[in-house]
Image 1 (cartoon, one colour):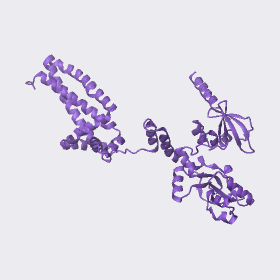
Image 2 (cartoon, helix red, strand yellow; image 1 turned 45 degrees about the vertical axis):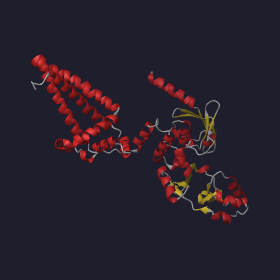
Image 3 (spheres, helix red, strand yellow; image 1 turned 60 degrees about the vertical axis):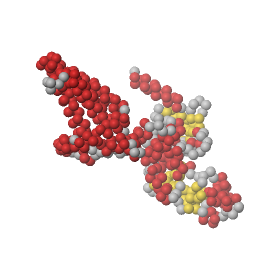
Image 4 (cartoon, one colour; image 1 turned 60 degrees about the horizontal axis):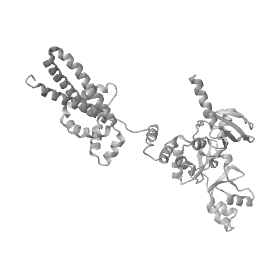
Length: 432
């Protein structure tokens, strides 16, 4: 190279440094590229996305090509820099060239292009894909040889690059993706997506109407009382039993018999002809499974039973759908959920209200890994039936019992603002 002018060597050095930056930046861009956005663009016909997707099917070959090119230009740049330095400083120039070139490559060919590529991976990666596709074919023999040796070494550690990478997401990862996409998806749609993902972690016991709150028709009651129940019922489907809910004989669609009531043609015989056989749901069934079971069996409601066949509650299709889309009712008052706001900022809550419903309506964080209702949560903490006026602290929420029955808490008052103050006091004590 002694006959080449110094100016030409400087130009060649600058070009090599730029090429090194391109190789470094494109490596970062392609490896950090959003795979799902790339696949979406590829399906829409984006040429760069298609090429990038093809290259990433074998990342070992892509990395082999990039590193082959990067190392080649870096070594060549080092040789040219040493030659230039020797012309100015003699043998001492080699050390000077090594130090300066290390700094230049670090800043201009590594950190800067890689940072830019990490911030704008799509643009960088798709441009690089157009260049790497023909280069991979051109240098295939050399890349193949490098990958052969590298893959054999990886095989010693049980790693097989030819098997490709798994880009699938589990439920927790998908939930995180939905959370991070809130700025692009309407809030209600985000809540629905998260609701669908949460169905697998929720069982029918979490949302069922408790046994004591089930409204049904006892065929052994006086006939006038039966007709009155049918006329005043607020539910579309109710269980029909004899003497006890454990002796349920079926489910009755109220709309089918109301016309008979209006025409005064309803009799016990005609009523029984409209009763459909009961549908039972084992306790612990996830909402995802039960939603599919409702669809498969063409049912809209079912009775939850334990391992002994005792009825624990009632679940409807609407209850499951409300976990996804929220309450269907047009009245948004808290009272519909058994939650009643008070002037002092506290809430009077019915003991039969589900904890999940309380957390969802009020954005609280009462524990949901134990009892399903507020009454059950209080009884678990106290291990006794409390008297009215009893106070306790559950998960930093001050709870005051306001009304009890013989064996259950009917209503309780919770002060969320006191919970916040209590939490701050604990934080202050920990900081101290």
